Image (cartoon, rainbow, N blue to C red; front, side, top):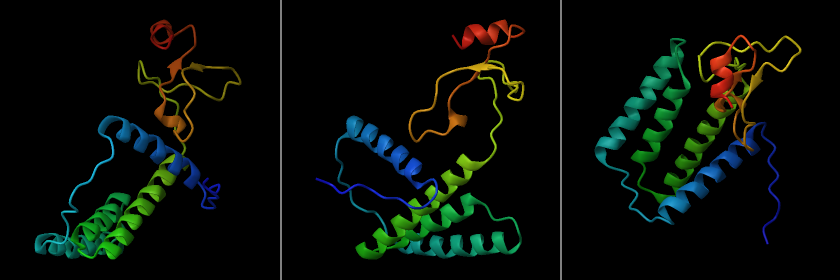
Length: 160
C-alpha cells in the first residue's frame, strides 16, 4: 500500500494529476517503454552552454520567458551523461514545467466561444455559456464553451 501524497506547493496536485492522466494514456497506447538515454554528446554539451547564456541574456535584458527557462533545463538534461545528475536535471525540467503550468492556470482566462471565437460575457449574473466541466487537473480554459444566449443560435446548436 502506498502512503497518501501530501503536496504543499500551490497548484502541484493539479499538475501531478494531469501528468498522471497523461502517463496512463501513454501506457495504454505504448505500454511500458525502455530506451537509451541518448544524452551527453559533445554537441549537446555545447548547446547546453549556449542555452544557459541565452537564458541569462534574455532575463538580463528583461525579455526572459518560460520557454527560455525550459529550453535551458532540457538542454542541460540532454547534455548530462551521469545517471544521477541526469535524473536531477529531469526533475528540474518537470519542476519548470509545473511552474509554467501553474502560471498558465492562475492567469485570468476570458471565456471564448469555441464556435464563433467571440468572448462570452460572465458578469451578467446569468448562465451565459454551455459546455463540459473540466476533468480533475484540467484547467478551465481548455474545455470548450459556447454562447447560450438566444442571440447566438449557431453557437447554441454547436454546443449542444
